[in-house]
Amino acid sequence: MVHGAVIRTFAQQDVVDFSKYSNIPTINALTDDEHPCQILTDIFTYEEKRGSIVGKKVAFIGDAACNVARSWVYAAEYFKFNLVLAAPEGFESPVTNAHVKQVRSPEEAAANADLLYTDVWISMGKEAEAAERIKAFAGYQINSKLISLAHKDVLVLHCLPAYRGKEITAEVMDLRADDIFDQAENRLHVQKGIMDWLVHSKAA
Ligand code: NVA
Image 1 (cartoon, rainbow, N blue to C red):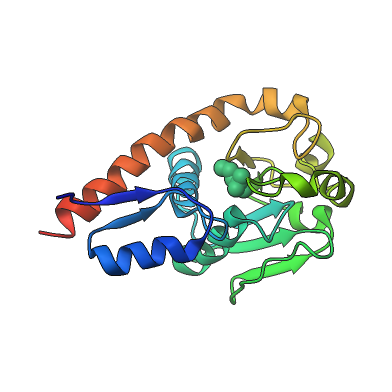
Image 2 (image 1 turned 90 degrees about the vertical axis):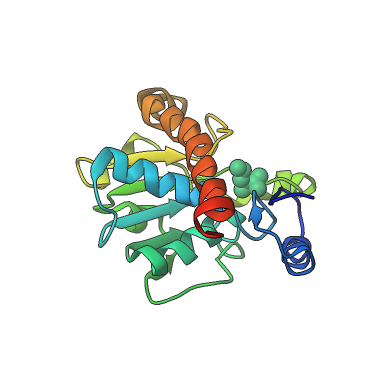
């Protein structure tokens, strides 16, 4: 009775199973493992503002094991850009490919980056680990010093909600708000595009 489904949940397997047994287009709107609509939006936003992402350097600072970082890993291979993930010990991405480098140093990741990106230190479902994570991620922050190491035309994006003073400073959030709120708006348009593609064009 439905032409497609959008699922935002915790277990990735629930989305996989739903897709398999329903046999209708199934869109992952966030799981513990992936956040593909967000990363398609981020790439759309980069290309809207700076042009092709092919061959560019994307630096992700923070929880490289989280859903957003993992979807960045898959995107790096698909869209052919270089991704550097800077994360503390224990928070590395469990998935990787030839376009991805994992480092400890946020400065190394940020050096000459075309896109600087971060996500919350405490993802949905990880609230019980808050104290431990705040300690582990200290220093994994997008701030003006990190931006000064990047390409002079660097774009700064954040998937929101942002925690000022944690993964991004209040100063950077304010200076880069125009881009970050365009990015937030773009998710609406990109997700409409994904639905249209899956339900209409792809089915045609
Ligand atoms: N990693 C974050 C993304 C929020 C859009 C979370 O899962 O909470």
